[in-house]
Image (cartoon, rainbow, N blue to C red; front, top):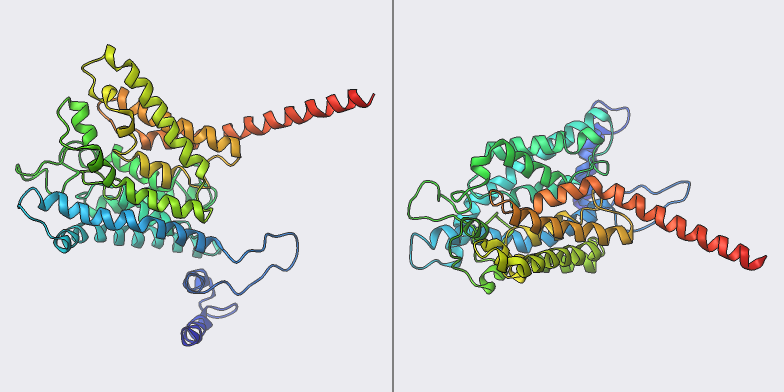
Length: 389
């Protein structure tokens, strides 16, 4: 490590203050702080002193995403190969999936970080760390066969319009990764929805079926998967959204490290369960609506609901900040996700729209929670004054 430190210091010399490449210092400093803890300390004022900086928080989220990513790579290969041959080896599926998924991750990081570095140099500030997570989330929520140039355009839109337009990391009102997915969904609908996009080459080969469970339910066809298949993730879907087991493993890490809010995660699943259970009770009146009669517990383990609640809804920038607000915010996300899923057969996956909607209303929720607390305190003060008199 000492050798790396010395080499890095030598590389940084032309970028130091007053030197030839001073303007590009933010770019080289980003590499420095990525590898080493920043070597500066606070000098005045009140600050929270902690060994964990923003980069380390983001790295924790990236680590939490790895189980879902690895499974998603394997499942992308397995879903395709299992339909064209009888036996599929583990490494064979991993290789097939890696060929499809890893280029998407590379494009996402290359384009996104390129824009982040350009804005850092132009504005004269350090590189924002938020894209460490966003750059991985964007390809993880995309269909496996989406063209790379569409991924690149979606990343550009998410970074420029969803984040930099508001001032960069910490200032955005919408989750950047979901902004990218929403852009791709409305700009390129034939590549983001339908029965031929969720399994590789399903749109080109008649022998390959790419329909998801939600798609089958919306179309009124039988679902050839049991609850364990859904929970484990052996189903078609977005690259890393299918395995609830892997998603919950990541959620455990986020909760134990206090990076993710357990209140939002728990309330999100509760909201979805309550809404799905209500529709199950009403399902007898609508026997032809398979989504309404689908068991409430299965609603929690299909589509992108679990992934969205754990990794998107808990975004500390765009989520509610107060404790009570987190409960309300998460509950409404789960509730609206299932409601959109059932009421809109043309778009049965509602978690994206639910989270983006609640991103907009998160400040309002916090406002009324705070105002409610203020009113309660005023009432207590008045009661104490009357008692004293």
